[in-house]
Length: 164
Length: 420
Image (cartoon, rainbow over all chains, first blue to last red; front, side, top):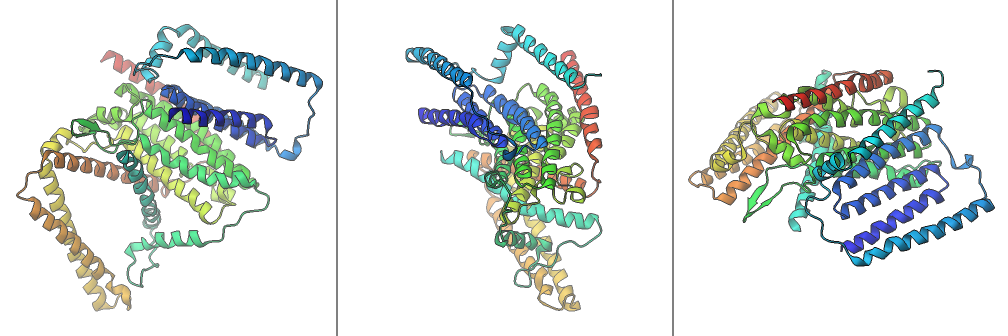
C-alpha cells in the first residue's frame, strides 16, 4: 500500500519537475512546479515528517509560488512573446556531464537502501520534536540562515531602489 | 474504515447544504438591512414560499440549466481547472476541525474530526494559502483585462493578509501550547471567560479582519469590485462553473466561521456546561431539548394558524398563497407532536452510558453549528453595513497597522505567559 503511494507520488514529482523545464507557457511551468511541491510534501508525510510536509505546502506552494505566478501574471507573458532558443554545443555538453554526475549520485543514494532503516519513534516529525532539535542542536545554522535571508532581503531592496 | 468515511462525508454534506441557506440569509438579510422585502416571489405549487427560501432552489435549477459559454481565446486547461481548484480547496479545511469532544466507545476514544493532525493549525493556513490559485488561474486564463486585474488584486491582498492571519493566531497557540486544533478547543474549556476571545481580544479582532480579507468578502472584496472590474476574476465564467465560484465563496465563509469558532469561541464547547457535566446529566439535557423543541413548534403552529386564518379572512393575496401559513402550521404541529411524544417516551427513562455519550456529542455538534451560523451571519451583516475599502487603504491597514500590532500582541502574550 505504502509502496504504491510512494511510486505514484514519486512519479508525479519527477514528471511535473520535468514539466517545469519542458513547458513553453510560463504559467504551465509554474503550476507544474506547484504540483511537484505537493508530491514532495506527500512523500514527506509518508516519511512521517508531517510538520515538514505542511511547511512545504505552506511556504513553497502557498507563498513562494504564489509570488512567482503573481509576477508572471503582472508581466503577462504570453507564449508568442517567448522566442524559440536553440541549445548551444556547450549547453548540450554540460547536460551530458550533468546526467552522468546525476547517475553517479543516484547509485550512491540507492546503495545503502538495501541495509534498511529502523522504526522511527512516535514523536518523530512532530512540531515539538522538530522545534527542539532546531533550537538546541542546530541553533547556529538556523540563526545563520535567518541572517542570510535578511541579507538577501536588504540586498533586494538596495538593488531595486538605488537612490534610497 | 466506515467511520472514517462517515467523518469525512457527513461534515462535507452539511457544509454543502448550508450554502443555499446562506444565500437565502444573504438576500433576506441585505433586504431587511436596506429596508426592502427581499426575495418572496418563487413558490412551490403557488403556495409554499418559505419566506424566499424557494429562490435558492430555483437558483440551483437556473445555474444548472444555463448555457455554458467558453470564450474562444481562453487557455482551456486552466480555464476549466480554476473553478474546481477553488471549490475543492475550500472544502478540505474542515478535515482538521473537531465538531465534538472525543467519544469514549468500548474502551477507546473516537475523535470526531476527520484527521487530528499534529500541525493542524498550520494545515489550515497551508490550505488557506492555496485558495489563491483558483482565483489567480481564473483571472489569468480568461484572457480578459478585468479578470486579470481581479486575479492580481486578489493574490496581492491574500498574500498581505495571510501574514497577519498567521501572526494573530500565534498568541492563541502560545496560550494552548499546541498546534492541534483539538487541544486548542479542549484548552478553552466550557467556562466562557476562558475562551480565547476574552483572553486574546486583540488577536481575535485581527484574525476576524484578516479572515474577511482572505475570503474576499466586503469590505475587502476588491478582487470582484463591481464598480471597477465588472465582476473581477469570474467575469468570463457562466453556468455551473460560475456556480462553483459562487459556492466556493460561501464554503470559504463557512470554513472561516468554523475556524473562528474553534480558535476563539470554544469550538464545540457548550457554554458553562463541561463534557463531564453533560455526560452525567444527559437525560435532563435531552428532556430540556425535547421540551423546548416541542414547545417552540407548538407555539409556532398556533401563530401560523392565527396568521393563516387572518390571511384567508382578509383575502390578503386573494389566491392560494393565503393558505401557506396553514400548511406551515400543520408541519410545525406535526414536528411539535413528534417531539412531545418523544419527550413522554423518554420521561421515565434514565439514559445508558453509551446513549448519554451520543446525546452529549450531538449537543456539542449542534452548539458548534450554531456558532458557525452566527459567524456566517456576522459576515453577511458586515457586508451590508460597511462600504468597500480603497486599494491603498487596504494595503495600509494590512502592512502598517495590523502587522506591527500583531507582533506587539505576540510580545505581550509572551511576557504575560512568562511572568504568570
